[in-house]
Amino acid sequence: MIEFDGVGHTYDTNPVVSDVDTKLDQRRVAFVGANGSGKSTVARMINGLVVPTRGHVRVNGLDTASEGRKVRKHVGFVFTNPDSQIVMPTAGEDVAFSLRGSGLSKKERAARAAEVLAEYGLDPEHPAHQLSGGQKQLLALCSMLVLDPDVLVCDEPTTLLDLRNKRRFTELLGLLRQQVVLVTHDLDLLDDFDRVLVFDDGRVVADDEPAAAVRYYRNLVS
Figure 1: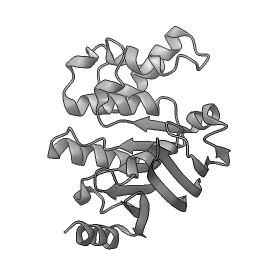
Figure 2: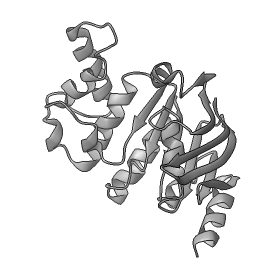
Figure 3: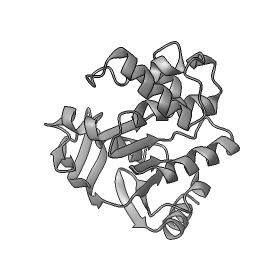
């Protein structure tokens, strides 16, 4: 359960999020909106990358502002550009790096990383930065999934992918046990989602099943 209670956020003196009150308990939830609408800021609040200046965000009852470290054990985050998350030379080392605080031995971390990578068809010995764009995004996903979070937040993860890889990545999200919160501009990928929230000027202006929410958003920006 993700709860937003009277949430607002201000950068300097500029309010970018206002009066967000909602509970997210569906398995597949998407945020859509124009650039600057506040959707990514709200998404980043779910794992404490951004903390609200007003109100509270809670994940499984944990407050993201005061219990951020505990929250991040429950919430994984995948960024738009996977290069911002890839820090090690090979795919295996990169996924194993996510487990550095797990208490597992180096050998156990490597074995667990190889196991997760194999599920997605990636070679642990492959140089990480020589992977294709789609493979890099899969690697970023694996680096989060190896931690087995309850929630996975993906902030425009398909922006740099071609259509085939966009569809493949979104289909993979649909197979995960985790609750997924997807921030996206790719409206045609949302048909199988449970719920879509539309953001405008820092507020939730529509909250519905995909077809109705996308229709509202198209009318909003037309």
